[in-house]
Amino acid sequence: MSLSLAADLANKRPQHIAIIMDGNGRWAYRRHLPRVAGHRRGAEVVREMVQRCVDWEIPHLTLFAFSTENWRRPPLEVRLLMNLFRLLLRREAKKLHENGVRLRIIGDQSNLAPDLQALIRDAESLTAENRRLTLNLAVNYGGRWDITSAAKRAIAKCLAAGRDLDSLSEEDISAELCLADSPAPDLLIRTGGEERISNFLVWQLAYTEFYFTDTLWPDFDGNALELALKSFAHRQRRFGRTGDQVQEDACASD
Ligand code: FPP
Image 1 (cartoon, helix red, strand yellow):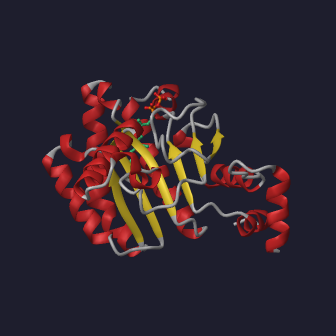
Image 2 (image 1 turned 120 degrees about the vertical axis):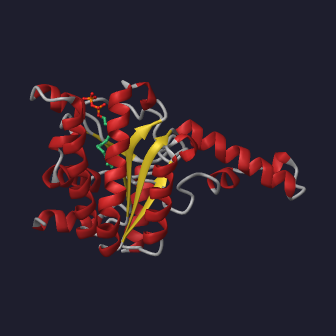
């Protein structure tokens, strides 16, 4: 780790990074390779990012691997992506466990293949007690699906407890979201040049800092992550307050 990154992390270390991994297809196209070659290389970058987060003591990482809208892709590509997830769960779960990584899959698992659901259950229970890094892999995930499912559960609990629906709060819904037990992401990175959130963590990104880069996901590496962290370290997070208030609070806590 460079000295300046160490200083930036000491000053402001994100507790949770979320990443939209975009650009695998274009990376492959530019090399006259099939799209799946881009996804394969992308899976290697996932490994590197996990290692960086472990090394740099960033305790939560959430990756958007497959959205509820990605089923619209050609069936062959969908099948190959599902096979990549199978491979990750079969081959990597043990290594993640040895590294102190807790693996969690977020998203609607009901229409994933039964063998994939079983692999997910096994990997999650193997790694459940690990705390060095929580790696959330969003598979068949959509932010609106997450909010809708959470709202349904929150309303059902509210009614079952005999409470008036008017008393339903943001906290009641928050508590039912997929990432209820993780802090909200501090930093969202999107690779591949697009600047939108594409139905990722719609609720959880309310106060997140965004970092967009043209780098395609298969080319994203430790240096690219370092640039994102440096950009984050120099942002002032105000959470609705004025810049002066934030500075006064920082001085008071020094
Ligand atoms: C977006 O690139 C990427 C995806 C929809 C899939 C992400 C999957 C991986 C990084 C590999 C597998 C990951 C794991 C965790 C095993 P795109 O295909 O939309 O690229 P394009 O915009 O250039 O077409």
